[in-house]
Amino acid sequence: MLKLHHHPMSAASRFVRLVLAEYGERCELVEERPWERRRDFLMLNPAATLPILIEDNGPPIVGGIVAGEYLDETRGAFQRDKRLMSEKPLERAEARRLTEWFLKKMESEVTRYLIRERVFKLEMRQEDGGGAPDASAIRAARANLKHHLRYLGWLVEARDWLAGPKLTYADMAAAAALSTLDYIGEVPWDSEPQAKDWYMRMKSRPSFRTLLTERVRGLPPSLNYAELDF
Amino acid sequence: MLKLHHHPMSAASRFVRLVLAEYGERCELVEERPWERRRDFLMLNPAATLPILIEDNGPPIVGGIVAGEYLDETRGAFQRDKRLMSEKPLERAEARRLTEWFLKKMESEVTRYLIRERVFKLEMRQEDGGGAPDASAIRAARANLKHHLRYLGWLVEARDWLAGPKLTYADMAAAAALSTLDYIGEVPWDSEPQAKDWYMRMKSRPSFRTLLTERVRGLPPSLNYAELDF
Image (tube, rainbow over all chains, first blue to last red; front, side, top):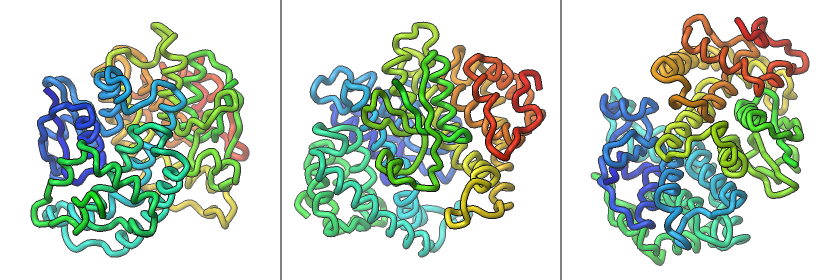
């Protein structure tokens, strides 16, 4: 049995959930608030980050990208044409580059700030860093988001999916990150029609359904969050 | 033929060079100053980061971790007991967690700041961000380094090598990052004897030789940088 320590608004957690859903894998979810630094959570991952995947009470598999590789080796490799990674090393390298782009680079320039300031701070106690959102962090993140969205639009204009002709981890990573931002209405979709078209395709996948029906306590989603045609 | 766009003081570049040397692969080196944002360099990698690996004029393989995966698939898989990754998915996950730890987490908390402030700024023009080092960034990075070194010491006390009983990418990643910091004399080895012992083992490997003889223009290495017994 698979167990995932996650937060509903963590992009890397959503990435793993999407991959699991694409492969039809069921998974027990444990919601974690990393900023509370729960002792048992730190024992699993001293870096205090999410997600953490555990299979059959085995050792922790730490981080979205690492869990993705594990799932490719233990699940994807047996999925034939439903596999979310190519079998060719160079194509795998391109999918990995973009998975890192959306889960690490965009995270550190956009996602982390908007989600922290607008979502996590609502749940945090004062002593854990809660309080009023930092307007300058939000402003900087919004400016950076435009560049990432433009890059995504450019990629899907040149290719069917982000990393090439087939759906891969790169699409899952970008959709996971953007779906957290879309929940809080932060994605200026109309400025990038190609990116919007790609996201509509992603949202329509059955693997996306659970994410779209999920709600964060005390924070209703943006108007179009769950709309397949937005 | 393999070609690597790198900087001699980039930890992720050194990681790939160590892996290549372990596998006895020759590689043409192209030195790159990412802050100059050379047009052809940005065409290879719009994120403007190093390293970038290219095989036989093929598409760019971007980033240390992505290049490491590529080399595992195209070289490591045929190395039998010299392979730097386990064949077991859970052990691979642990090696990947620590590779990420030393090339991403430690990079963003320690390495990036010390190398930028003490090395790159010497090479940068004023308009690219050159100038006097930022003392508070250096102070914060030094404080963080102690924690990373303690964690490394704790790992090698519990295990022969960082990720378990065998040498893996995790060791290459940690040694690559620490070797850049050791060059500028920033590693307080005497505070962590276990970590020091591990680093002596790493330094003695033939794959390390080239790194130890390399010199950055205008910046001589610390006294013990090239000493195997320090």
